[in-house]
Length: 252
Picture 1 (cartoon, helix red, strand yellow):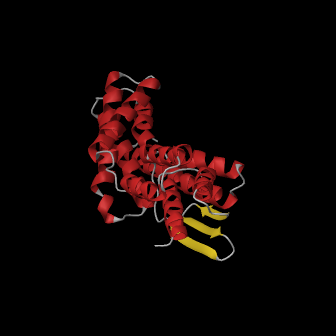
Picture 2 (picture 1 turned 90 degrees about the horizontal axis):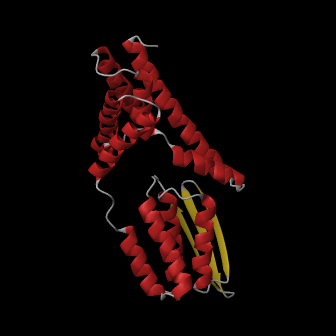
Picture 3 (picture 1 turned 120 degrees about the vertical axis):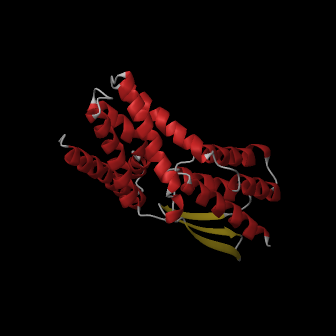
């Protein structure tokens, strides 16, 4: 493999992984340019949108390599994001050899993710904590905890079915709110509103919304608009699910 091809492979790969981890567009572009420049690319043309990485590198007058990398799906993975940022800093600060950098990048890319059931547990704890912050009682927090477990457990159980996010978020929010309504009818909770809000907190696409705003501020209008539309669509799905649950429970 030619030297410039290796530089392109590393640059495009890091950009693709950063975007897939939920990084904002400006961070992805800057990181890719720094890596390519460090390894001798005299010209770095990088264009990023929310689901694609386009990069063209030049070295001298005749050596040129181009890559188009689609990013089909993205999720928030702050651990991998931190590792990729550390790799970028290590390349510049320690003058890391190109082959060693590629090997380290492949290790990060193939690295194990957090246990899925740890995500489920954290979802329950987060839901209960937010319910407590809102002034919910102990029983309200327990209800939010159970619904938080149910919500993320549903995501884990249906992960391999490739369901539309629209349908999945409506179902998840409906089950979360519906479970709280049933517990209220059974006399197990005191404050339905606090329990429901706590239960749906794990569903909120907060990172996508904030990154969308940041992309717009950075004048990345296409990516920012796409991310904001995606976040607003999911907010609408969550609202729809809660509305249906409350309507069926006679509490609206």
